[in-house]
Image 1 (spheres, one colour):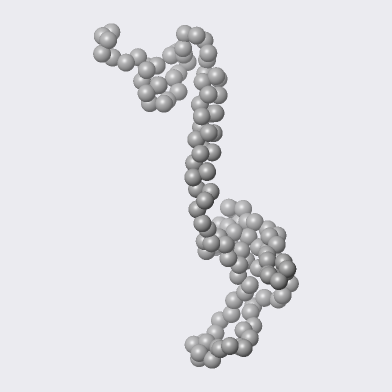
Image 2: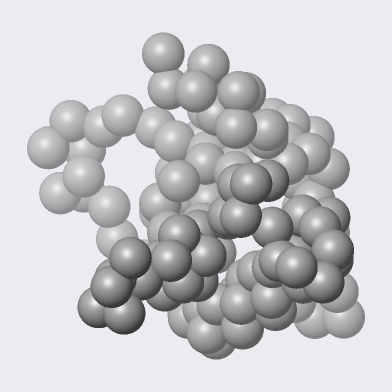
Length: 132
């Protein structure tokens, strides 16, 4: 062949692809060492990508309950009005991240503030079932 053509090994190296067994290096390092090196590199890249997004702000909110009111009833709402919700004090509250339901918890008092003790985080399958 002419010097203008790349070998399969060179093409694989340029494309970042895994060479097949017939193009394994002459040193006999084999695929397992190559895969180990690549997976280590992949893990480092994944870690770096994760670190890039860890500082993104997300809104965590908690819904104590809901109620449906007519426009007339809402117009009458003012300071001192008590709005009764659809939940009992002991019922779990819904936890949302950026408006998406992700779990449930219970209200606790932390010093002079309210807090939420997380009791359940939904799996992706549970989240899909909730949407239906």
